[in-house]
Amino acid sequence: MNPILEHMTGLHTLTDDVIAMDLLMNAKSGVRNYAMAVTECATPEIRDILMKQLGEAINSHEKITDYMMQRCLYHPYHIPEQIQLDLKNIQTATNIPS
Image (cartoon, rainbow, N blue to C red; front, top):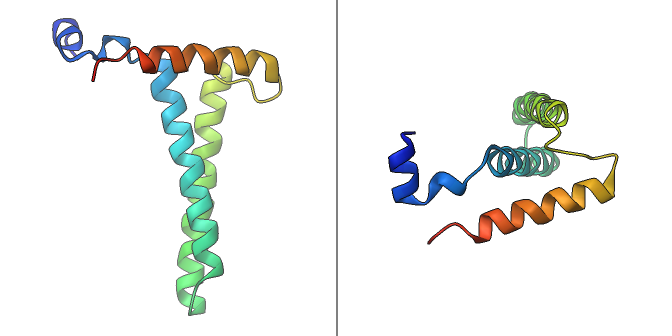
């Protein structure tokens, strides 16, 4: 987006960190939802389709996680570092004008 438009809309504070974390959280939610849907299937055909979608959702989650870890945006094995990063992202998100 154009820097002037970013500033006018308040999106200049929406950093890559916040966007990536939002994408990761949505991917996790998708995996959870597909897993739950698989357990509620009425037919084997629907279950097979949802299992395929679940596999694709898990692969997407893995790619997003790898991307974030490579760029030091996510620290799943270093909790204190992740907490500090989360606090920074919360501060950034709360400063976005409504």
